[in-house]
Length: 527
Image (cartoon, rainbow, N blue to C red):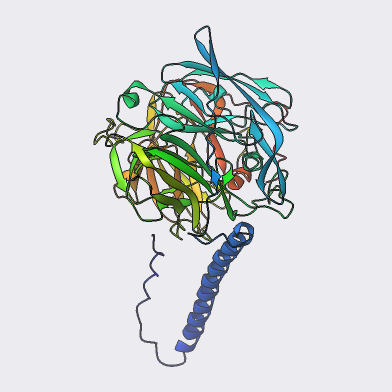
C-alpha cells in the first residue's frame, strides 16, 4: 500500500519584532496563513469531490452476496475453439459481431453483443510463425472495430480507432504471428464507444502457442486442464437488462454480479491433479485480486506477454482491466475450493468488494499431473542503457500529459527497431491503468525499486497506483507505418472513451510522419 505524502515541515519559529512596527508584519503573517489554509482546504475539497464522483458513478447497485454464501450451481461454460481453415498457407478464421439476447438472471433476458453468438466470442488459437487472417463481419447496427490486445502486428492490422468497420461491412486483417506463447484477447476499440461495446459482450481470447511452451510439462488440454476464465462484473436492472449497458454514455456502475465466461457463479469440474487457469480481467473498470478461499498457494507461470522465467509461488494475483495471468493450482481428490477476489489495496482502487468468482470441484479420482517445471523460459535482462529517448506520461483526470485524444494528432514518433524508456505516473487518487498497443514492455522499476516477481515478465498493461512511478522499457520492432498509429491509453474503458488516450507512429529512420484522420471521423464524440 502506498502511503500519503509526508506533510511539509513546519517553518522555523522566529521571535516577533517588538514595537508598533511588528503589527503590519503580524497582520501580513495572519493573511498569509489564512491564504495557505484556504489553499489547503481547496485541495482537500477537490480530492473529496473527485472521490465522491468516483463513488457516485461506480458504487455497486446492491450489496453483493457475502463470500462463502454462493452455491455455484451452474457448470462453467468453456468458450469453443474457433474453427479455422488453411488457404494458400494462411490460417483463416471467421468472426462475426452480432446482436442478440442472453439469459443471465431470472427476471428477464438481456440485450447483448457477441462474436459468432449472442455473448463473448470463440477462442482463437494460432502458432508462432503462422500467417493468419481473420475475416471479420460487422453484423451490428453501429460501427465497430476489432483490436488484438497484446498482439505484435502491423499498425494497419491492430484494429484501433483508425480501422472502423461500418455496419454490414467486413475487414480482413492478416499478419504473421511472431511472439512467444501467451494469453491474448480481442475486443472493440471504437473511438468514444469502447466501453459500451465491450460491456455489451464483445470480447474473446486469442491464444498463441510455440514450441518452447509446448515442450514444458504444463497443463494444456483445452477445456479439461487448461481453462480460459473471462471475468467481468455486471449490474442488472429489474427487467434483466444491463445497468449502464448498450447505448449508455457514462461510466455506469461497478457491477454487483460477477460473470465468468458469461455465467454467474459457475463451478468447474476438475479431473486432474493440476489445472491451469488463464485469468483475464475483462471488466471495464473493476480491479480484482484473485486468491483461493482457503489461502492456498498456487504457481503464477505467465502474465500478459507469456511465460515468466520461473513459477512464482503466490497466494494472490491482482489484475487491472485488460491484464492476464496464467496460474496452476493443485487439487486433491474430492475437495472443493472457491476462487475469490478480495477487495484490492484501497490505494489502488476505491470502493471495491470481495466476491466469490468460481468454485473448483475435484473429482473423487484425479488424473496424474506432473509437477510444474522449476524453469520455464529465458528472458533477456532489460537493458535501459541503450534505450533512447526517454519519455514521461502523466495520467490525470481524463488526460495524459494534459492532453485528450485527437485522432488527427500523433503525440510522438518512434523509430523502428529501437527501444525507449517510459516513465508513467498516476497523478490523482482515481484509479488508472496503462496499456500500450503492439509492444510487450518490461517493467524496469517501481518507485525506483526492483519490480515484484509478478511484474518481471513481458507486459502490455499495468495498474497505476496513485503517486507511484513506473519505468518501462518499450521496444518497437519489425513494423513501420508513417500514416497509421498505435495507441497508448488508460484501460479503464470509460476513461479511454473520455479521451485518456494518445497515439504514436513508428517510422523508418528519417521517414516523415503523415497521419491522416479516418474517413468520416470527427472529434464530436461525447467526451
